[in-house]
Length: 146
Image (cartoon, rainbow, N blue to C red):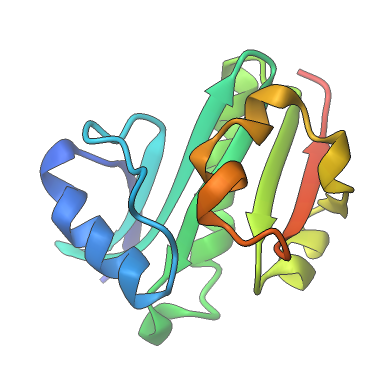
């Protein structure tokens, strides 16, 4: 069956929590209505996710996860492309992310390493940045024209 990328619906929150927990990603701050979250589905089965938090012209990419049995099929790339397209529509010019395991992957997508102290206040104040992700996590950004 073909993988489809769809906006997340609130009733899919329990499945999303299960996927993220299985992949050791934070779930404590997931918004109940899941705005700016997209899911990869194989039929009805949730196999991937990505979220995007928007703060004026900057955004935070988060919750990128693909079920281990579906990896290496470009699903993560499709999810990221969907999030980036939406970010551009909403005039976001710089996207940040925090990772403990995927910095090489994100470098291939055009992200570069940044010092934590250079991150804008809006991103620093997110739960992901301020408390959920360890201070040893890698912070990255990508800037593009909108």
